[in-house]
Length: 361
Ligand SMILES: *[C@@H]1O[C@H](CO)[C@@H](O)[C@H](O)[C@H]1NC(C)=O
Ligand SMILES: *[C@@H]1O[C@H](CO)[C@@H](O)[C@H](O)[C@H]1NC(C)=O
Ligand SMILES: *[C@@H]1O[C@H](CO)[C@@H](O)[C@H](O)[C@H]1NC(C)=O
Image: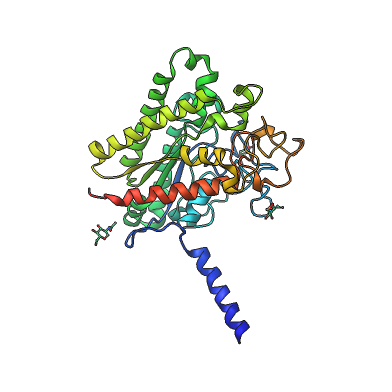
């Protein structure tokens, strides 16, 4: 009797915990779906059918994903897109819109348009041969037509206006395009270049608004000077964080945050666009790894951990670590699932409230 009661209790608890949102929303608010845009931090497989080096649909990517399944996610397990829908209690994973196995019933709860290697600067996506933000928007338009056919006009527009739209880009613009392309580096100083990024980011948010989005999160650029590849390339013999990359990220983030405030006050007349700061939480992990149970912060798990990424992180990479749990980084660019989980949870929890603080109109 006691045992049966205990069993039922555990069982019910398990069912509830898979269906329940971890992030609390105000009482009468629901978020039916999530739509992601941007780069490899949030891509869940849209690059799989592209001819580009920015791919990850091979092991050891996905080593800790559903028993070891490489899907085109740039990590060992789930990425922030998945963790956001999981935290909101919507579903377990956010499918790539270009996944050939995508089902009609996946549409109403959200899909992912992000493409590893993309940037706010159109040149970034062009150099990497990936899907630029402009085309990610075209895919959204195509999606909306499909959604209307599937659930009807009225429900489709309610899904769009209540869902969360999230953009994560800018890292590739600064570390790859700006500092490594003469066409950008010699033509712009970092102030002018972050202005170029900002103009594009702002236009993107406004286009999402025009298409019906009313809850738009823009993820800040992380402290990119501290990612293992940049430590290797620009951090000197001690592989320190590259300060000028971190400063560029902070410069852009400051402008972005101010621009979103401006759009909310003068254009949208409501809190539509929310700045989601990952820079602070990420740097805190790098400065205080022990606090979060991490041991390795300056190299990734894959290969030597100091340079391998995407096509160069593969089954032949020597010395790949056995267990990424204590690593902040999975490869030389991308955080491990556990680091993503900590950051996503913190950032979502904080920024979700902002949408509902002052939903005036
Ligand atoms: C939630 O309820 C409050 C109080 O009844 C109301 O003012 C607000 O508009 C509602 N919010 C939404 C999103 O329906
Ligand atoms: C993309 O898909 C098409 C059709 O399924 C296939 O023929 C082609 O080889 C794929 N390309 C890549 C780069 O995977
Ligand atoms: C990795 O280590 C953690 C903590 O020590 C452990 O819980 C987990 O099961 C390990 N994972 C694998 C795949 O061995």
